Length: 147
Image 1 (cartoon, rainbow, N blue to C red):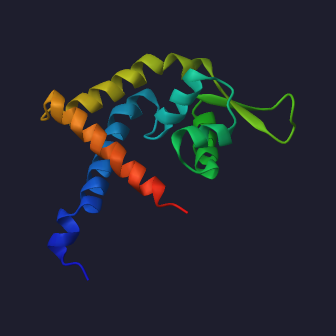
Image 2: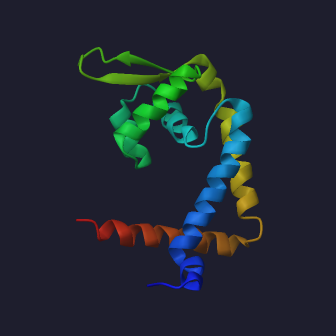
Image 3: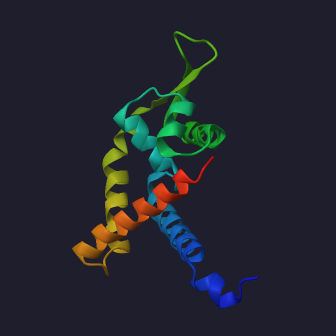
C-alpha cells in the first residue's frame, strides 16, 4: 500500500490536483459569461463546425457521448445551443449554436488564453514546450496500453 507521501507526491495525484484547480479556475472565470467549465470545449467544436452530432462532439473532445448529451441539455437551457433532428436521419440530432453561443467565442477564447498564461506564468518558454511534449508523451503511452 502507498503511504501518504507517495500518494501526494506522485504523478497521478499532481495531475489530478492541477486538473481540479484548472477546472475550478475556468469555472470561476467562465461563469460571468454564462458558460460552465467543460462547455467551452463543446462550444469550440461548434465554432469550428456548427451542426455536429453529440457523438461527433464527444469524439473530438475525447469524452463519452452521454457526457456531451447532458452538457448540451444544460447548454440548451442556458440558450447557448439548440438541438434539431437531422434532416437525413431522423434517429440523429444535431447541435447548433444560437446567436448567444456564437457571440461568446471571443470572450471564452480570451478566458482560456488568460487562464493558460496564468497557469504557465512561472515557466520559461522552453519549459512550456517541454511540459506540453511530456504531457503528450504520457497521453500516448496511456493510449498505447488500451486494449
